Image 1 (cartoon, helix red, strand yellow):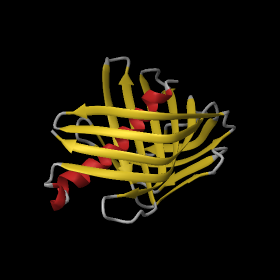
Image 2 (image 1 turned 45 degrees about the horizontal axis):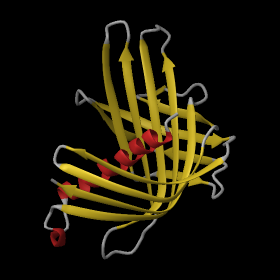
Image 3 (image 1 turned 90 degrees about the vertical axis):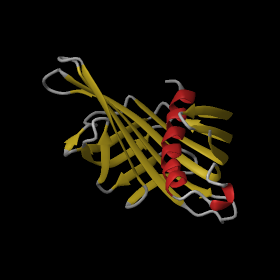
Image 4 (image 1 turned 90 degrees about the horizontal axis):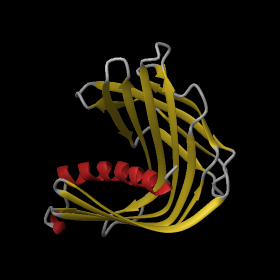
Length: 216
């Protein structure tokens, strides 16, 4: 598992959530062109599941991210915030058709990661997700992380761009535990996509991050 690539996907989930705020209600003081966020004491839980349905045709890959941190915009005090993101990639191997489903929620959820990164839980109420075709789906999560491996410590810097947006992210003192398991339920339209153990499970902690989003 490429930890850096996975955390880049985690970062993208946070960025998408914040881009909504930037687009709908950009701060006048920033002339609607840029926005900076700071996150302190941020815990992250990440899990990936893979499976194939009974027909052998429908293959899926699910990525679940839970974040519990203290985001802070310029001029404002930090406030505890929880965030969950579910991404589902669906491949119909019998007709060579593929699409993805993404959904996020910031309400009616619990993200708990133990300080030593030994275990975690992420639970959500049912929330909305949309696929590439524009169809809506219902998603809910109830997962537990356990049997985590050794702690890896690093510092990372990320820079990436999408059309019209440029993003910079600094992780300071990033600690990660991998090698464990996540188990429980991920319900997509009532179907459990996690009947078996995860193919990847990771827990992370960053004691300080900065996120800078700029319109180009």
